[in-house]
Length: 463
Ligand code: FAD
Image (cartoon, rainbow, N blue to C red):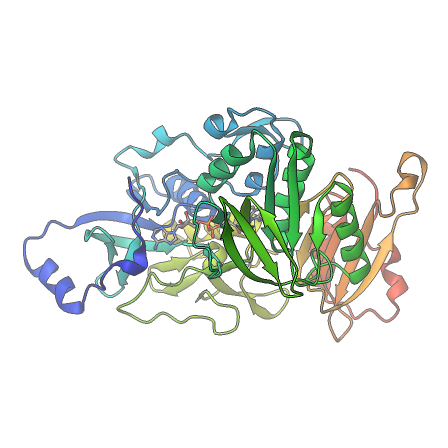
C-alpha cells in the first residue's frame, strides 16, 4: 500500500461536509476515534477498554504498523545480533526479559470493538459535527475523539534529493531500512544531530556494528552532545566517550549541503571541508503534527507548538489531545510545556483515555513524566522536570571506589535550579530508580539557601 501525504490532499470545504451529511451518505460511526497510532493512542485505548464495556474504537494511523514503542528503535533492537530482528522485532529489555516492539499483535485490532485503519491520514476534523475526514475521502463520525498525532521529523533541503540515502528516523520502517542497509558492514554512515535520537543511534551503530566495518560520523553545531541538557563538562565528557567508540564526532559544524557523488554522497560543512559517506540520517528534532484540524480553529501554542489543552487534556468538548502534540499546563513547574518523551505519551494517553470514557469527573494531568537515555555503557541517565542546560545546575558525584575507579563519571545527581533557587529538574546519571524522590523534591518548591543542602537530597544506593 502506498502512503499518501496528507498535505497533498485538497481541503474538504464546509459545503462538501454538508453535502455528505444531507445525502444518505453512510457515515460510519464510532464511540471513540483515535487519530494517530503511537504510544499515546495505545494507552488511551487500553484505558477506554477498561472503563467502557460498550466501547467501539477506531484508530487511524499513517503508518503500516499497529501501535509500538519507539525507544528500542535507537537502542535494544540494534543489540540483538540477529538479522531476523527486522521481522521479529523482538529484543531483550534492560532486565534481560524478551519483549516485542509492538504493544500487541496485529490480530488484536480486528474486532467490532477495536479497529485499526493503517496508512491513512486524517486531513480534517469538523468539530461541531463530530466528523473526521480521511485522505481517501471517507468521513467518520465520533462521540469522543483523541488527537495523538505526535510529530514529523524535521528535514532539510540539499542539492541531493536521494530519499533512499538521506533519511530521517522515527518509524519501524526507518529501522528496517537502515538495518538492511548496514547489516553487511563496510559502509560509512553520517548522523546529523547531537540530541537524543542522533546520539543514541550513533552509539548503537558504533557499539554493535563497528566490528562489521560500519564507519560513523556525527555532525552537529553545538560544542558537545546533549548540549541542551548536560552541563558543559558532562557534555564534553559524553562526546569524548562517543569518540572512543570510533565515531568521527564533528562538533561546532553545520552541514551546508549534501551532493550526489558516483553512487555515494558528499557532505559539505560550513568550514569549507567535506567528506564522502554512503548514507545520511537527519536527526534534527520534530515538528508537532498540528495539521489535522483545518476547517475549524484549535489554539496552537505559539511558543512550544502543539495543540493547547486544559488540565483534563481537552482542546474542545469531547476532543482530547495527548502525547508529543499536546501543549499542557505543568502544575508542579507552573509553566505551559510540550514534552516529547515516552513516559509522558504513556501517561497523557492513559489520562485522556480515562477522561474520555469515565462516568465520574475527569482528572487533571498533574503527573511529572520522566525520560531516560543510554549512550555507551558509561553514559546513561534518568531525568525529570525542567532539565534545560540554560538553568543553573549543581552536581553531586558519588566518590568512586573499586572497579569503577577508572571511569571519570560513575554515579551523579544533577539539580537544575530556577532564578528563585528552587529545584525544577533532576538528572540522575548512572543512578537509577530515583525518580520518585526527584519528583518530590521538585514538588516541594523549597528555596535552596545553600546549595550544599542538596548533597544528600538523593542517595546513590541501589534499591
Ligand atoms: P507518536 O508515537 O509519534 O505517534 C503518532 C502517530 O500518529 C504516528 O504513527 C503518526 O504517523 C500518526 N499520525 C500523525 N499525523 C496523523 C494523521 N493526520 N492521521 C493519522 N495518523 C497520523 N522517549 C523517551 O522518553 N525515551 C526514549 O528513549 C525515547 N526514544 C525514542 C527513540 C526514537 C527513535 C524516537 C523516534 C522517539 C523516542 N522517544 C523516546 C520519544 C517517544 O517515543 C515519543 O515521545 C512518543 O513516541 C510520543 O508518542 P505519541 O503517541 O505522542 O506520538
